[in-house]
Image (cartoon, rainbow, N blue to C red; front, side, top):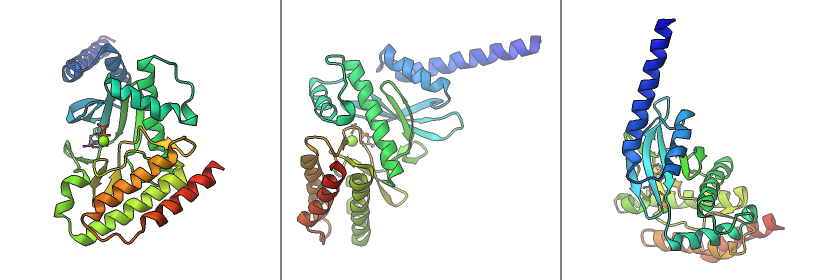
Amino acid sequence: MVKARRLKRRREEERRRKDRDLIKTVEEVFDSFTLSHVFRLEKKGIIWELKGVVSSGKEARVYWGKDKRGNDIAVKIYLSATAEFRKSIKKYILGDPRFESIPRGNFRKLIYEWTRKEYRNLKKMKKSGVRVPEPYSFSGNVLVMEFLGESGYRAPLIVEVIEELPIEEIQGYFDDIIENYKRMVCGAGLIHADLSEYNIMVWQDKPWIIDVSQAVALGHPNAQEFLERDIVNLLRFFGKFIDITYSENDLLEELSRCLIEMEG
Ligand SMILES: Nc1ncnc2c1ncn2[C@@H]1O[C@H](COP(=O)(O)OP(=O)(O)O)[C@@H](O)[C@H]1O
Ligand SMILES: [Mg+2]
């Protein structure tokens, strides 16, 4: 009896110590809302440790962490944001038929919706066979997904390694991305809307598409424009390294057909 109580107390102390460690990692950056979401995921065992910052962008910070079983996780946390970000969030969310009911002016709710959107987009893409990180869970502004990388080192972005790659490999990556993009549009019914060499990682000799919070459903009023922008970005970047055999028009036509079919 006494032993059991002592054990329980020790567990409590351990947890509190761990909480303090977690807070140490994040306290300078995060508000109490963010902390409460981190702790909620911690209680579920989805986040066990936050070990270090992988990327510190204007809007989101990405951490390397561990889950309860010791597996690597990537934790993306959306921070309170610039006016510019608010505007762009609204542009992507409000035109999307899935997200028409966002309360006006409530910024925290908007950020939560944004996080949920990235989670749902990842789920949907994964299910359609698009190579994206597997989403594990989310709470509030905190999203947990598969970590692309090893021992805390993230995998490189394609822009960081392309110059070292042999031509055939670049060709293979390009074909692979086109194939994955088709699955995204024609299978998942989503358009990435921010596809570029900065949102493709290279991991285990394959390209992975990341950063899908702004991806929109095909019914979005700007769907066609976003689709074209993605394709133009892709062709422009790869065109610097390989001969592109696809014609921009054919590619756009093929993808637009899916857009029209899925919409109709
Ligand atoms: N699942 C992941 N595993 C490892 N690193 C990641 C993962 N997702 C993102 N990153 C890293 O974090 C950076 C920022 O993530 P991203 O989703 O592109 O957000 P944003 O560009 O909006 O800041 C990426 O460029 C990449 O370096
Ligand atoms: Mg990005």
